[in-house]
Amino acid sequence: ERRAALAASTGPGVTSDGHKVPLLANIGGPSDLPAALEAGAEGVGLFRTEFLFLDDSAKAPSEDKQVAAYREVLEAFPEGRVVVRVLDAGADKPLDFLTPADEPNPALGVRGLRTLLDHPEVLATQLAALARAAEGLPVYLEVMAPMVADRQDARAFADACRAAGLRAKYGAMVEIPSAALRARSVLQEVEFLSLGTNDLAQYTFAADRQVGAVSRLQDPWQPALLDLVALSADAAKAEGKSCGVCGEAAADPLLACVLTGLGVTSLSMGASSIPYVRAALAAHSLADCERAAAAARAADSAEDARTAAQAVLAAK
Ligand code: PEP
Ligand code: MG
Image (tube, rainbow, N blue to C red; front, side, top):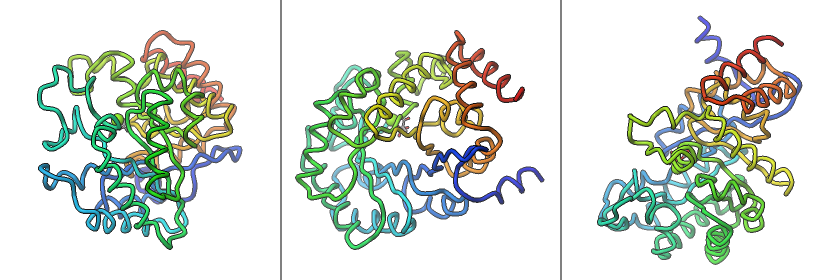
């Protein structure tokens, strides 16, 4: 019954005192749109465009094929935001025609934006397809790059977007600790940040996200990870820009409150989590979230951080 009530909940993400936190959907392609719309997503916060490249890992999809897929997604949220991530190939998402086969540590090698900068024609085609797909639509398009390490990466991506004539906001994913540590510098080149907490945890703790034996270190409640979220959110605030979260962390209702308290400005997640996160935010004020965030950051383990945040939010 509770599930049914939650699933029926609608409306934007907002704390009990009216602080807005847009709730967006992570999607892998047009087939994920019905669930996102049903959950009342306010837009798409992470469109993983890899799916288009998986059909034929021997070559990139044509520009026309990409335009059709992007347009379908953009048309689903005529008034909303759609954040498209350019191709994130390599490491856990290898593509035969792009990913070097002989790297000893693929997660530390040529992947994400690094792959695209080595294959500028693939990036240029994708950006040109996005520009065409958005033509004539009122949608608020944002385009972001995966695996941005520093300002130089962010500039190279922004330059490619400009060269493609893309009318959109350009952003950087924060998935590497260097980008969080120097977030203000990265923000000189782009207009928003989006924290990919799955990879950010992997690179902060030197713990492969595909290795179950080190999953303890992949826990997004780890206080070190919360510190990097806070650094990024503070930098965005200082620059008058936004900083969302699109990793798995955003799908945990309690952690979503903590992330809000840390200053994160939007939360993107698998559609099925949206009703639970909406309900958790609605039950707490921004000040409650800030207190929970401070308590979590004062802890010395993921488990203690969770317990401390829970105690703050249950006690109010
Ligand atoms: C992440 O790393 O948190 C992220 C959102 O990207 P992906 O899971 O696709 O690597
Ligand atoms: Mg990632």
